[in-house]
Length: 303
Length: 323
Image 1: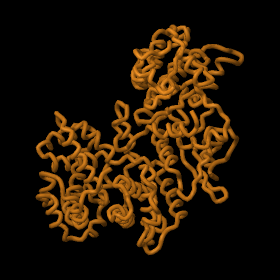
Image 2: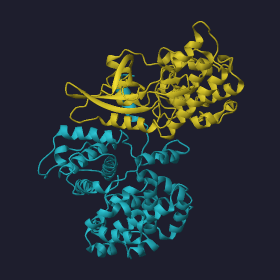
Image 3: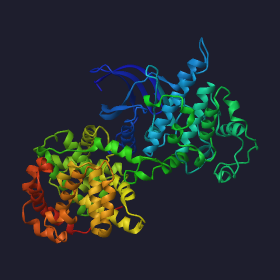
Image 4: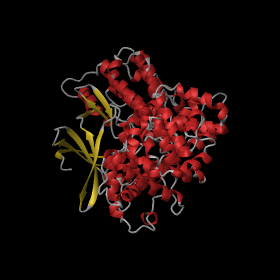
């Protein structure tokens, strides 16, 4: 760990402290994530080993925050694991906030929304092509390199390797705003569609500059969704009423999605509606989304 | 949802790349990701390290085949892959000491078991009968050293990952599922048996997979071999020269293959010929492995003959169970 100079603590991540640090040899800025991994006599835990190797594999994409290296150091004779990521100073939440509040509130320019959304689809497609779900996509997990106009997906997979003690000592409330209805309803077989739902919510949030479904409990979250998209029926989503957490809900009729995102052009509303399909099997894939006419006006060759 | 339920749910729905069945993922073009990755995983073991490699390989084979410790074939396969990748990156610490390759092999087996979700390997059982035993702490330290050398890329892209692709891309229509399953089983078996041959470390995983598939098809379904050959030839990323070389290494080590390759090695009906060729000592070939790949028939024949001693043992035993 002598290779890095810790500059400041930048956060208390869901799985440990995060420091901004500098590589003494190269001057490169990095994010040091200290894990709470216990390496007992069994050595590195299998889940952590698998997750870290997965991150190494996915790090090949520029749309995934790069895991530069894994360092071990020891404290009181116990090995501690540090994950060294490239440092990127802002995230999509902060980025959208600069357009929402501050001295000059204004909508995000259309081409910025398209460019960021396209990169997000590309990163998600990369993960899915490796058979990996993110499962916790949200604006705070999408880092933005403002200079290069790049978006990178962070905190991939770490949920599983490092979750176990999480709830007991962080009081962070896990956000439900981007959670897909099948997860909220307790479905036992979810797949790539859960990430696409989150992408849809994030897309709408960039357009609206505020969350599309800001629920504060699982029930409220479902009600937010149902009020806009209509209460789902077995006809449009076969099996929905048999899901574990299904109850009798008020029967709302679908509202016009375009009214929730009034500044969005019709092609954008079309793409959004394909991402927010109730039946996960009908939801557009990340790869197909990249081919949607909404992106016809951007220069894809730069990505 | 309470916490225990949540954890149980997370474990049950874990959804990640299965390196042996990567093509069940919902991706459109997973082959591209694999081809992308295999470059990072191609080991190249120097002649200097080949003695250590041989020692480590023989320790892994011993624990895998003697039945005292339950080590699944896919675990031992991955372990030897780690050994190769480690030796192609770093010099083995205390290389000259006879225990060094064993320490490397044990650490790689332990890591591979963790990656494959197999039962943890008992440090005591695996060393039973050895002169002295490494303690837990030493092995864990070596595990971290190995991971450092692998840069924590423990998801090796091995030939096993490509078999499914070649089977689905290259098999003649109409598909006959039981036949394809037996071709795949034999190809896996061949890959496991030939892996201890250091020359195999020179081939890209995709090439090794294609070669194993053709050798297996030649044995199991000779009538369909031309169709498989045409299918593989249509894959632009398979270098035909390398494919041929790899087929020869496989034929030499396992006494399989067909047509020209088998004839060149003097292999008639595979196994019997391998036994007949086993008179030479296997040691002689290790010195000139590095230059062998492009050299000539002479080397190929040489390795065929000298590899025969091991080939006899490897190929005459019952095929390992494939889980």
